[in-house]
Image (cartoon, rainbow, N blue to C red; front, side):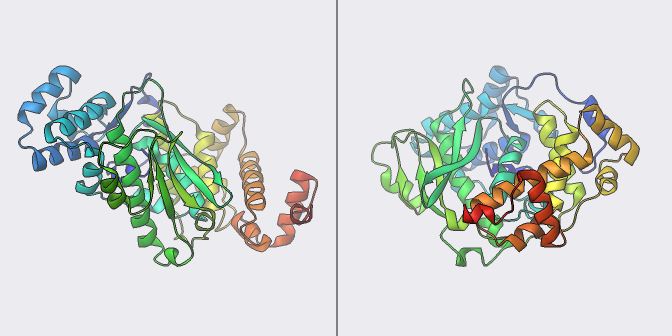
Length: 370
């Protein structure tokens, strides 16, 4: 689930591309990380008691052996995690167990993921990167940012059809997302809350458990609305446009996160990895194919050949990323044109104007006067 990816501690430390390709699974089942389920066990022992009897249940029903959890690449069936939430809620008589989980389970931040997210140009980009990394932990939901009203956007959580889940997991994800987002942004950018309020409401598709409205309001600290068309977190437009001053990203960190993300999705695309590296590096300078190839442990010649095999070129990817981001920044009208040029890796605004005219047969300023 989005932002819960922060708890994953066992990302690959180096990138051996051929080994990654050879290890791609042919079919993936919805799952959570071994670390995530170990946190479930720790919470069970804290709130309920020894996990020994439960361990036998999970092994018999899901083939889950506790010894497997020591393997950093082991994935626990999502059905087992869903069962954990439902059984725990029933034993504790806690209709808000998802909130209990998010409040009781501490989260630690993988340094590689934090560094990758720290290269975001603005708060919206931070969320877009976070959404991409959500598969590092689970495949229960898809996320996207959509318009809520004239002044707000919503980080919408769409549960994947036919994937086992329960409302406790939705509750936990929403609360954990807010907590982790605020923690990361305040750690990296301490002044961010000076610019605008962040989250203004939480939306749930499920009904409010009987008599628990106050419990939800207390946990989130903002209005909580039930029986809504969608699950999501409502955010102020102004806050999403806050310009972040990121620390310079590491190409190795970006590559490692992207390789792991694609591995967990059972596929591989060098073009996607290169595209993400380009996007992360643009605000600092125009990225070179040599830099990215080195991070991938590939020679420049091999890097270019593999991209050609995927019917793309490095220059084409660079143009594609710049064009997409240029359209987004201009349509959002949140940065001066000089800043947009900088974010796209241009050393001066003249070069940006020339590229924009080539892409759209118009000038950037025409967008503001039309």
